[in-house]
Image (cartoon, rainbow, N blue to C red):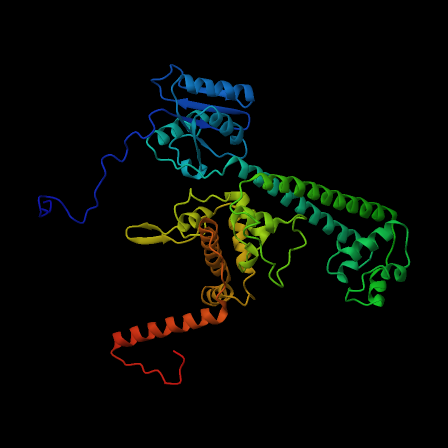
Length: 462
């Protein structure tokens, strides 16, 4: 016999079911399955006798796709972010005035039945019609330009580093241990010695004299490291790698010029004449891979924040994040939404009143990687953030502490960029004092629960 529920037959503990949960949100919708050579488009069957059509990936065919969608009264389109194939479709449909939802492919992968291009676009259409798909974040066009240049520059820097590694390998095969003596083979001393080797000099002592006086190794040690064989094929490989390295640096310089010109066209947040940039903090100099122009000044003009004053953050990290999200963060309601978009928050998947998974989601995001790298630099920082990271590392371990600190840096970045407040470091002592006061409050609360009285000596600083 069924158990009778008091109160008019309604169980007060049972959650309410929204009867309007599957109302049609986008009646004029379409779904597009993106491919490398062709795209499949699906619209409502009552709009066209042939509701599913195939279009090639050429620009003329994409324009024809847009014409067909507009002629059938479509206003909103959903498509997956597949590789880079979606970019051309996205730009053309946006230019034609359509609302484009760029959807994460992970959110639409549970397609029932056998997977096909036709079923995929129809499944996207159905989900988008009922409003079950979330639109991905897309920065403005000027931010996308800066992102393209900055990513291209990062690729050139990586290729230049790879050329240095191949130079070291070639020297090792020649029995020249120069990389064990010089900390940076691509520095002034290293490149001067390598060029002399290519010019025909073979005397180790003469080559050692070319090193800069600031090199810590003695001339005798340098001369010993420069004794080896001079095989012609290895010299040829070394010459090729040095030329490649210089070519990469030449391209990096050209990329820096293009990036500087583009940043100057972006709208400033403040006037440098009225609010000039202060001096750089002592001991926080630009790294060797930094751009050759004043990136610190440009970012200060665009954001109103001197990023060199934030512990763990430098201008290159700030540029990496700004190139990914821009300077306008109004699309993120709060700093929590921003951190969640970066993939720095736990999922907290629950079922049956139990938490099944607390791991952070796997998100491929350059800004997330930058914040995690910044968190690792706080290990020896004598600052408030440094003290907090060391305590988290002791309590949680390195992997979880890096994620937690990266989230805190992301929230700090959000507040500074959105509100324009200057960052003030309160120091390690302030953090330790606050932590001690928190421990004392916890101790008093626990003692009260146990009926025990805690007495603090009069000489204590608490």
